[in-house]
Image (cartoon, rainbow, N blue to C red; front, side):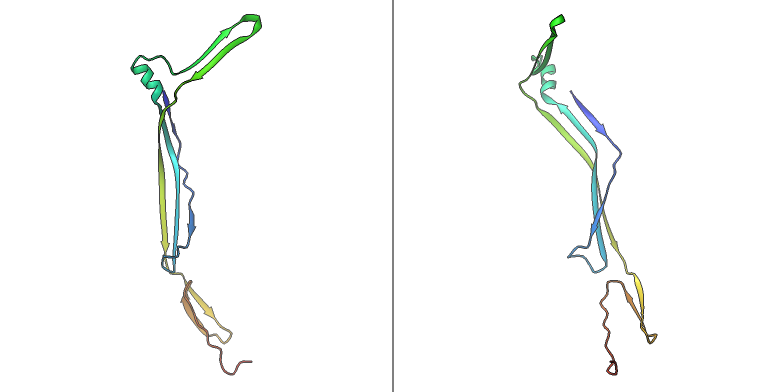
Length: 124
């Protein structure tokens, strides 16, 4: 008449930098189905209303000559549902960095920030 399949959810996420997100934001999401249930509606209707089965499998044993069988399915209606676990993540942060130049000049910045370096006039 139906069945239920339950499993432990295993959510694998993928991440990307969204075009609409702030500079230092990483977005991730993933989902996994952990329960599936099905109900055979035509079989249930046959039982509840005393109707002949809409699906039948018959086999006749012919002894030394083998078996003779048939199968029919006039109507197959099934209601199903699925439960899923969905996870969304966003990581926003500033990651400080230090850039030390040859002349020991130190430039502090955050990863992802734009920095500008001006070439001295007396170089090269």
